[in-house]
Image (cartoon, rainbow, N blue to C red; front, side, top):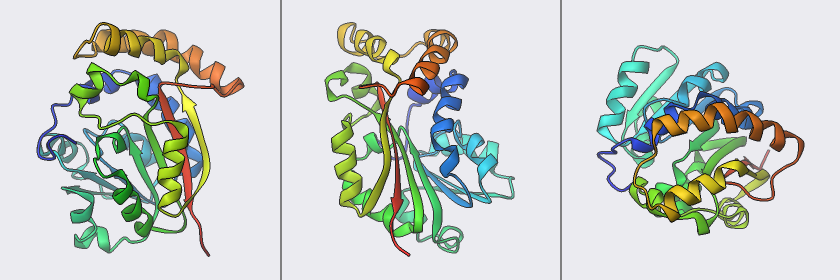
Length: 241
């Protein structure tokens, strides 16, 4: 992220207003979630609440102190949750995290695009997972959509299907599935971020999109995988016995 110690959270506030969208993301990952799960860049815990339903242990890593404070209030007393404020490298040296190695699954939702050296973190995650462990990634797609919102949110890039596949395979993972997600969101994102050059996402508009467009898009994309989309969903596996 732009500043590992602080994140203003506007992107997270917009996501928190979209419960249908959140559940749609969870549906992509649910069959691959079990056991010891780590979420990198847990933010304010919007998605972590869902991962709890699938985990024996849930490890949440968040570098921004202001977001970590929210995680502490929400999950600090939960017996199945371990929290760590800092980077992934620091977390894997911490006793509570290192004592849980290896992990069954690592999840990143709207995080990888913030990381300058995305290849290095892929290699680190590969070492954290047990053989057969799953890597679950949700990222912004289509470089042509990169605009004002991406810059404000601190995105280093948007991915194509092939660039994300190459990145993950280069770290040693076997790609199980990669697909575009939220085709209906492409035009609104282009209008807001490229045409209007807005620097904010209105929670009201995000909520409206969640109520009207998400149910339609979810049904359409269940029937026919979209040829492009605002985001990408990737599921990969650490191969080995």
